[in-house]
Image 1: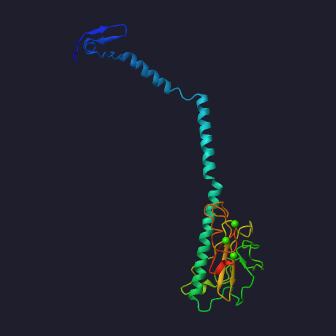
Image 2 (image 1 turned 90 degrees about the vertical axis):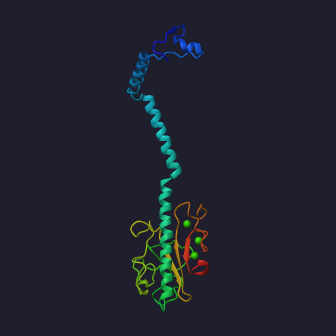
Image 3 (image 1 turned 180 degrees about the vertical axis):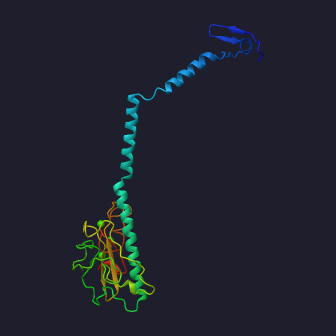
Length: 235
Ligand SMILES: [Ca+2]
Ligand SMILES: [Ca+2]
Ligand SMILES: [Ca+2]
């Protein structure tokens, strides 16, 4: 475009003659007016939020926070984490007792040379997790691994030493707080069978849940998580 091209003024504005000739009239750029508009935009952004805008933002944040709490449900997430710990703890103890049975020449599952009978052992006093047990709970609730803990098996006699340094306890179960959550142990010293029990806390892992481990463990109690080497897990 030539610098000295003549402009044509119409009622719409000012056009260059060459654009009119092509049939594509282009308004000339009004630098002064645009600078004014840009300045106004900058001024507007500096103004900040109005009260209504702030209230809307707060309402949106509140709705999102509620949705996150409803979807994630932190209480259930913590319960699920404790259930994962319970599943892991019982697998660890089960592995240790199985190792004891396979490596010790004369294994004794109650460290008393008895039959175990209907006695059971629990990780806290008054442990009633194993609903199928009708016998007496041993006073042994210690976490020691040499035969006087809540799993009365002398794991220290395993060649190479005990696979556990201490017996686990239910994540919510301790003598001071509650007897509602505990691990239990029962045995058959004649057949060298044993069973370990825990109670799942979350709706996910409990009986009827999406990852139900209580009713799918092959044991005798629908609402208790059972592991061990006892056929039918009905000790
Ligand atoms: Ca069960
Ligand atoms: Ca249960
Ligand atoms: Ca059972």
